[in-house]
Length: 436
Image (cartoon, rainbow, N blue to C red; front, side):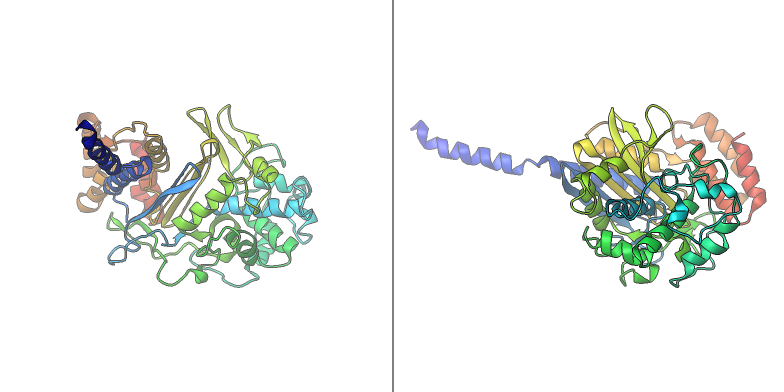
């Protein structure tokens, strides 16, 4: 008789097994919970996040709105300005040209752009590798001209001839690290000159198409209708609002104008984690992710990526931030783990916190409890009751409620810079004094 119960026992065991979530399902539940909380704590207008684990996409989701005041939700195809995440793409394009024998990393820049000059004789010694690693001595861009965008094919060459040519180097080429958006803008000019086509066309043909990044572009006018997001900044009301300036100018494509979404960026990361998949050779990819300039024993600059250490593992990444937008890509190659996030908010997105929150969630490690930024309290007070009341509240909370709020100086730095952007120098200086 006992054998008659055996099929029933198997059926019950199967039912229990079927109801138990898989590791991927459990991870998605954890990520949903964590990221919903992130959006609430930091009051983000919109956020899109993607995760790769074990060589497959395990998570992709949008949160919030494409534009405050509208009902349009962010989804996995929503297009974000990716800012400096453009740079690893430029580095890949250069390495593709190296593989074809059309560019040498240690050759001088002037070999590839004969018309290039600077108001500094040392410019003739600058190499392609130095530009990729921010050791060329190039200064940074001072004015991106977001309020005076150029859209035509000649914008980049004009910028190099008319603006870069007037600059001087900060140091002898190859001697010091100095992050330079200008260098990457000029590298876009190298891609165009060597390939014989526009930078934007080259990137579509040789990177976006092979990676099946169907809705990615370096040209803002090519963003598919209905997918665009709007940039948000801290406004005069002391609340987040839609920026009246969109960060686009074609002459800064190389450093800043990649537009993409979670689905496309995950496809790009998968290509990297799988060894290049015909887009870049394994040797070039290894070089890209190998330290070229070391900051210390745990961090370095590669070719288009920064290299750090997390739990004794290599973490390669690049972040981006421009008016109204924040973005990040990161990978732990040895575990085939990748993350990407993008938000239509500037300055008030905590990159480091969000990065390690995602990584800890993927590995099922504990994460610290999130706290409201102190700026979420004092910024509204500045508008409603003046800086004096905001200052008094800041020090009172720092004395009595330090565990309830995040007093990281980065928040006050973000608030100060926001007021400088608004032209309110007096309040910007007052906020600055809170840090000293």
